Amino acid sequence: MGDFDARQAAIDEKRLWVRITRSCNNRCEFCLDSGALGGGPIPEDEVRARLRRGRDEGYTRLILSGGEATTHPKFLDFVKYGTEIGYSWIQVISNGRMFAYESFARQAVENGLREATLSMHAHNQELFERLTGAGGAFKQAVRGLVNLKRLGTVVSVDIVLTRLNLPYLREIMEFYISLGVMEFDLLHLIPFGRGFEENREELYADDAMIGRELARALELDRIPGMFIWTNRLPIRYLEGYEHLFQDPHKLYDEVLGERQSFRRLFADGTPIECRQPERCAVCFLRDFCDAAIRYAAGQWDSKPVPPATELDGALARRIIADGSRDAAGDFPDGLRIAVREHFGEARSVAPTVEEVREVTRITGLPVMGLPPCLGGVPSCQDAPDPGCVQRWPAPPPGILDARGVPEVAGFVGFYIRELYRVKSLRCESCSMNARCAGLQVNLARQWGLKVLTPVTE
Image (cartoon, rainbow, N blue to C red):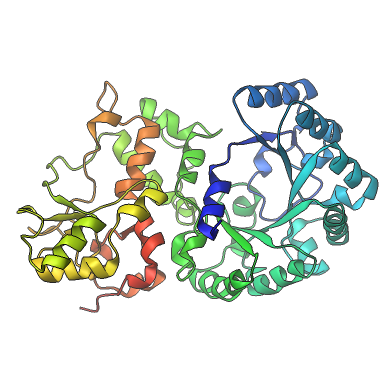
């Protein structure tokens, strides 16, 4: 199985996340969930009922989380119960400290624990315990990791990226590689909880640091058998490693998960409670929120989008083979790049960037849906002119409710296809930057951000 297929299979697996406690034995500086902590263990009957319901709903992979899941007095019982009722894979998200007790680690594995994702944010005691706020945590967590590896458990490592540990990110990963870890998840800081409310000045790094240190660390992706994932990390930091970008379908989890903000926004216009300029400036969901607020209020461009012939790979190749714009019939209203919501479909239908360039040369037509540097036309936002394209196209009628407002799940798919546009860090120097919506996210994943060339005049 290729790297893409293996990643996609993991993404598509039906996973049940169950929070079993609202307490933690660390006090991490960057904790986004600190506002939800303090409630202690979730009652045993509630957890067991959720586990049974998950199996009834067809979930096969169980992920136990917290707070710190292993501090629940019934943690080992929940692992055993999950095995008994038929979960084929049981995983825990943990800081690893309880697994330092060998008898605890062994019992967890005997009860059915197959994987542990351990939060290991540094490679030495001083930095580790500064970030986690817990004396002795480094030695315990490392001992827990070693115990789990020795017992045959799959172990991956989560690293929350901060201004304090980014300069050592490669060294942190190399340290855990030396302990046998070959799977990492690099987590972008989320502007909630203690990390934002108390420690933002200390923790948030600028674009230059994030881009530089990620580029150095991600060279480790070339090691055979290495798996690196990114969590909420904007693709602009991943140029050259776009295959590591979190699948856009994660938006469904963000929008339709436990938080009800977006459901309420689309249902009755209730404002998103976390909207604050300083928070939004560093939030992964900022662009999605901006679009959601606009569309939930019915504020999109009223002028119909002009019809256009979809330029997919097959049409592009016909035009190129014939050498004339008449090769595939008449398309007087222009061409529009083929995009899809699912990356697998996008890869199968989209032309290559070389084919797009050749088609624009042969036909003399711009291709809508592309940045100007790739032969597209600028956005009407901020500086309209007769040749621009609409920034906020009308949503398809099929996702509108009786009020004429998009329903929330349908909007997520529409956003991925039409509005999820991304740029390179280099685009900041482009003279067209303010009028360019960017490259559709799945095209960026397929072509790479290297195709974007800043316009200097």
